[in-house]
Structure formats: C-alpha cells, structure tokens
Length: 345
Ligand code: SF4
Image (cartoon, rainbow, N blue to C red):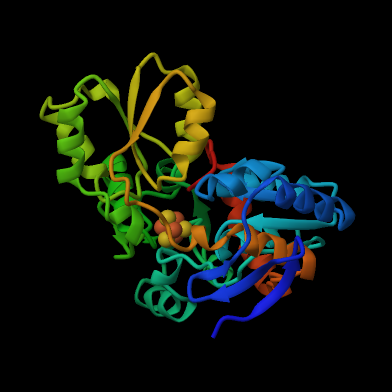
C-alpha cells in the first residue's frame, strides 16, 4: 500500500509505490527546495549519466561511476547524495569513508552486480586457487573485497595485460566485457563469469544492423557491456560499417568523443539516459539510440520525489563495514593505478 512520507509545496506528497517514490513534479519550486536543502545540510548531489534528465540537471556533478566516486572522495561537503544505483554509492563510501553517503532509494540495485555474490565468488576462487580475480566496478562491496584488481570498461584490457601471462584470470561479472577483453588480449587462460546487464544485453545485433543501415553515414558508439559489441565489431569487419566509425567506449569516453566528432549523426548503444549528456555536450550532432527501450529501471528509481525525501529525511544511508571497505579499497586503488581507468559505466 502506498504511504505518504514527505509533504512538499502544501499539497504534493511523496508516495512510496511499487516502482519507487512518486508524486512530486520536478518544477522550479522543487529545484529551489532541493538546492536549499542541499546547502542547509552541507551536501553535494552527484548524478550518474543514466539518471532522469531532471536529476542530472539539478545535480552539482554529473558523470560516470568512477569519476563520481573520485569527486565524492575530494568533496568539501560532509554529505554525498549519490543519484545512481547502490553499488555506485557503495564505491563512493569505500573511497570516502569519513563522509555520510546517501542514496535517494536504496532499492535501486543492478542486475549485473547481482549476477555474482560473495559466496559464489568464494566458490569460484576455490576452484582456481592461483587465479587473479579481476572484477568490473559493477559489483557489490563484498565482491570487491574478494577481488585482486577492479577494472572499468576503459582499462579492462590494460588490467588483464598487466597480469603475468602464466597466471589464470577470473574475470567477472560481465560476459560481454569479458569477451571484448579476451578478443583484445588473445588470452586463453581467462575464465569469464556468465553475468550480464539485462538493459545492455537487450541491445542486440539485429537492431544495430537495422539502425546502421537506416543511418549509413552515422558513427556508432557502443558500450562494451552491450550484447551488440560483438555485432558492432562483426559489422565493421564485414564492411557494413567502416571500421573507423565504430567506437567501443565507456560512458565517459562517449562524451569525450562527442565533443570532437566530425559526424553529423551518431548511433548510441547504451542506456538511453546517456543521450541527455551527449546532446548537451555536442548540440549540433544528432544522437539516436540504437534501442530506445534500453532504459534501466533501477536508475529511474531515483525520482524527484526520492531525492526530495532523501534530503529531507537524510535517507537512505549507505554503510560498508570497515574491514570490507579496506579490502575493497585496495582493489579499487590498484584499478586506478593501471592505464586510463576513465569512468566505467
Ligand atoms: S544499466 Fe545495467 S549495469 Fe547499469 S545499473 Fe542498470 S542494470 Fe546495472
């Protein structure tokens, strides 16, 4: 049953419904109240590139998961409001343990991070006791604590190349990113966990082929977690799309490429929230989604109502126990030291 949790503007209320907090319009009154509360509570608002446009526009900083965690670690404010999914807020807490980290709705999970838990990883490690464990940043703090080196989609290849070629590698949790890394490194002693993000995996090769035929002059920006990354490389290899027009990029890399592209049209294969920042970064370019249904329901749980409740009530606070955070921090710091980690998702 829906429950009212916060009054706002005299007659608007925050309801907790089946898809999260709702009932508040993101109008000027809301924006003013959010910024007033953030100032009063000495909080900075960080928003991931996949957030709703209203949340991206009110945030003090917008970016990818690692860039935001770094901003959290360096922020002057005592409180970090992380508008993203839970593992991202946990990473911010790991890198900024002395700060209060809040997420507007702690139920905002991630199907990719949920595809492996600590017990499953312990079991997998026991089967390969000498292997080096490489985890993509989309993992829980507990899984990071059992990891040797974390990686982002920008430096996954360099991280795996930095490992002694005679050591086995356990790569998790994303099978598409793993396939991309295996293809790039030619490594045969690398085991890949069969996890996937249901949003990215839903962007498939058939759609990519149809869209690239409909827009024959467009560049293609493909996130390596997409089920279509292999298809994009295949299409390039077969000459359907000139190889130099296919770019496999993290979300941060997409923004860098957008600012300097000479293309008039760009097809984007990742979560559709990304289009908002791309269009802002390069207003003269026509950015089109490969799959306009690729919307992450977890990211969209961070609604205007949830952000208002978060700042009003100081909820939901993110906790990571000290020992787990220390181990996880070591694997994240190793990641930052290798290559150009960019920003991950
Ligand atoms: S888009 Fe996929 S990987 Fe990203 S937060 Fe959503 S479920 Fe997780």
